[in-house]
Length: 252
Image 1 (cartoon, one colour):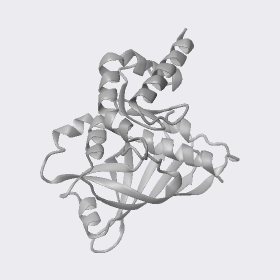
Image 2 (cartoon, helix red, strand yellow):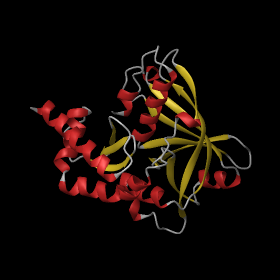
Image 3 (cartoon, helix red, strand yellow):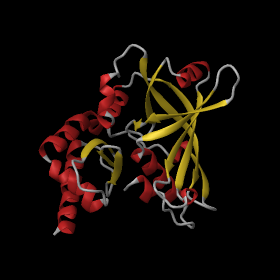
C-alpha cells in the first residue's frame, strides 16, 4: 500500500481503521518535515529530513549536530514530524497527512541504525561521521487529516505496534531481508507490482515487522501488510510464500 493509497480513507471509517492508515503512512514515508523550536527565540522551525522506522513504528532520523534543527533539539527535544501523503493529487488538501507530536532524542539502538541504512543506503556514506547521530522520534500523539472533515487525533498506543514476543523476528530481520533481496528479487517485485500497484523496477525489501514489510524503489516506498501478526522467521517465511502465490495468481 502506498502513502497515497493509504490516505484515501472513507469519511465514516472507525478510528481504528484511521490508526491503521496512519501507521501505514508512517511506514511508507521516505521523508518528513521536522518541526523544532528555534533557539533562542522559540519560533517554529521546519526542515525536511529522510525518515525510517524502528520495528514498533517509531520514526528514526539521522542528523548532524551542525544542523540548526539538531541544535534546537539538544536545547529542547519537543518536536513535530509532518508526514505528507497528498502525493500528486490535483487538490493536495484532499489527501492525507499526519502530524506526529513528541520528542526527538539521540539513540544508540542497533535496529535504528540498520533499518535506517537499509531504507536509505546512500546515508551509509556519512552515517559514521563524528557529527552525525541517529535520533528516535518518541511519539506522544498525532493529528491525522484525511481531507475535508476527516480529522482525527490518534493516541500513541494506536500508532505503535507491540513487538513483545517478536524478538526472534527482530533478530532474524537482517538475514531475511538480505535473502529476499539477493535470492528472491523477482518475488519482491511481484509484491510491489501485482499486490500494491507499483511500477516495474528493481524493488527491494528494506525492513519487516510483525504487521508487514516495507518495499522501496528509489524515492518510492510501499507498505505490504501481512494477513496476520507474525513473530518469528518461520512465520514470516510462510506469509511471504503465501503472498508471492497470490501475486503470481494475479499476474497469470
